[in-house]
Image (cartoon, rainbow, N blue to C red; front, side):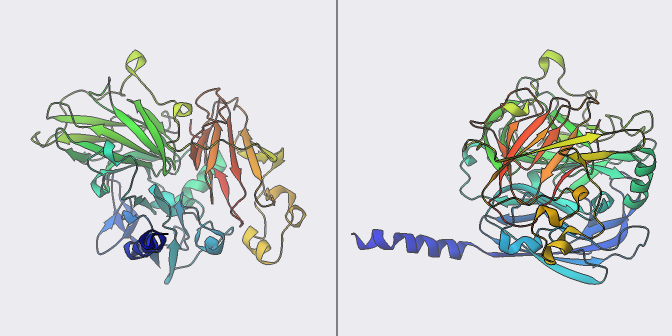
Length: 491
């Protein structure tokens, strides 16, 4: 054998080791004033002296060893003082499950005047985000974008610019603390006061009814350039309908969903649920001007919340050479009727398809909404939070279904089996985003249509369950205690 060829794998391995780096980030969580929509809250995250919402963007390169030191400097007792951070969409392996961040399932929260350093995997690439997983604490502001870039992205020929300036997030901004809001919701089932924020890069901007005219977030572009915008919904409960004015015939190509590449798919308007991420490619081929980025907020009852107003949370796409002003065209809801080429999630196809395996176990998740109460059931068993946290029970030796309380919905599965989760159609037409920690799932049936696709469905880690029903499958090839959840209803 040729000596060079025989040593090539070793050389390539050494090159990979050299190219990988230790990416260290320090996040201080503090009580300090911040007002992204003009309404002052006392909570923020910072890398240095300046606070921001969303929190600082975390970036890394494929293969990097990501180390995130979180310093808990919270002092305001009207909000939760402990915390625990989840890196949503990153799949921690069994040896590192304690860094996954689901409190009382994989880890324990840590209190004020303490620090914890998370070691996050760098073997994935794509668009992700981080947030507090302790109760609803991230609604207070503890959330931000996380992107792992792939120098050998198989779709890099489709775009020219992909950097921190092209990370978009959409978010809700709450005028109550999460502790007060949760108490109010549990008593009334009415969603507390919130506004919607559009974000270009790391600058969260929005307005609320009767509030100041906070400048809208601006995305600068150069004519003729193709941009990969990484759209991340970091909301606590709100989904958004996103479009760009003057793009009726061609808006964007979707090339990624939740960190995994998809075949380029053309649409001009899309819905994005809390926790979901899409990469969209937009070519700046319009006349140099200012154009509205429409981020239409959905969630709650407009009769109770006057902030559910499509004029309040928007962004501006500004071409080089355009005046520094808002667009002169009227605000719209984006393409409507025959002009709308809206995303149908079931039309997405993975760039590297794998068939969904047949299931070994079946679970059925149902959400019921009687008056002043939300009831979650799995296989007809109502969920009731356990008195002893799941993690403590596992550490004490619990390893079978019978070791856990029936109503805590803890299931112990053998390794390397396939689990199917079915969400039947919701008669109340509610939408609930479902997320699975520790692994991605095959979206066998999207809520967007009646199509059942086991041949080449996309894989992701957040999907909507609602009026049409949803089916997903995953494999138990990652031993550990993993958390799955549905968020509050969204319509």
